[in-house]
Image (tube, rainbow, N blue to C red; front, side):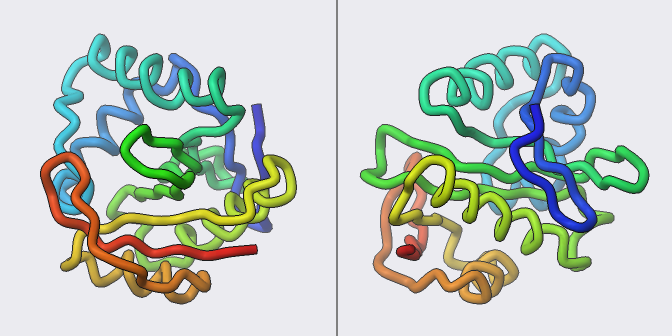
Length: 167
């Protein structure tokens, strides 16, 4: 299911056909360093990750992390979406790209579309983002998107910067 699209990208729900891509993305050095090592190494791990994460979120909230795909080639390049975590009061945005697609404006393009969808389709008036304090590229992107630093927050045993934006 396509969630939204931009000039260059489709953002769509993950399916169980996306296990190979999930294994690749979640084991990128930038993902394990800046987000977490999710321990997804096998097809079975990827199925569990998709079912317990994005797919469960789609069922429970109507949104979740979704695949970013280039329109011109149908190539999956990353993920972006909204997440409702029990540990946080507000819905947050998350994103990650394969290394070869970083720095080309894809994360910003996808995030703008996902934020618009969150506000217009899901009625969200506030969205937050959390990132490690040393993830300078993510912090720069959040600031370009209009997010403002609010506080430090502990999430999964790590200190993170929490940013927020209101619509």
